[in-house]
Image 1: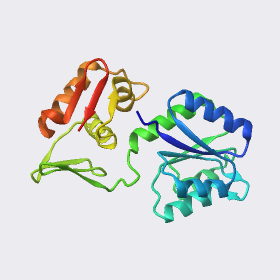
Image 2: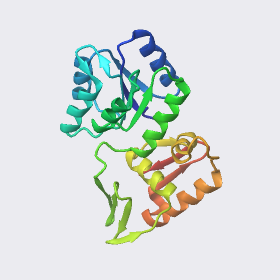
Image 3: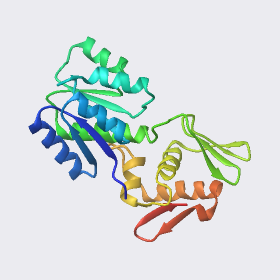
Length: 222
């Protein structure tokens, strides 16, 4: 199972260590950088699922870094983590392309909840992508439109989420726990029965053999 990869730009070594260790304990792969130049290099060399950016860092600032990255076509979701708490700073953060803004000091659990929420909403670096699934089946990710032979098929919200998750992790075995975490928010109660219903619906449209059930382990999308 591939872990979501996060970029953490934080120039305070102690805070960087605390945040990275906490997120890694909760199933994430965290790449730590400590200044703007390191962050630019990391963004050039790797693909990330989410960016966690401090603002006041050596060699530049998080706002400019993200704005430049967005101009270059990088659509990776980003959360600013900063002690700047004035409303004009918050506004500047969102205008530069940020998806969320977390003020210091913060609880690590709150950061984790925000990270999970953002990742549920942003599975793709290119949200405008249309995916070809074979047999005249296409899926418009941004608009959540499943077309079969040119005809749109209606799906529930969680069925869309599940399909996106499968597309992102084709041929990977996804555990029940991983699927549950992506489909249900932290204040919702996951349901095995509902998951089986969503799987049944997707099999109906995509074909029974496309989603393989591995007993007591999870599901695999082929």
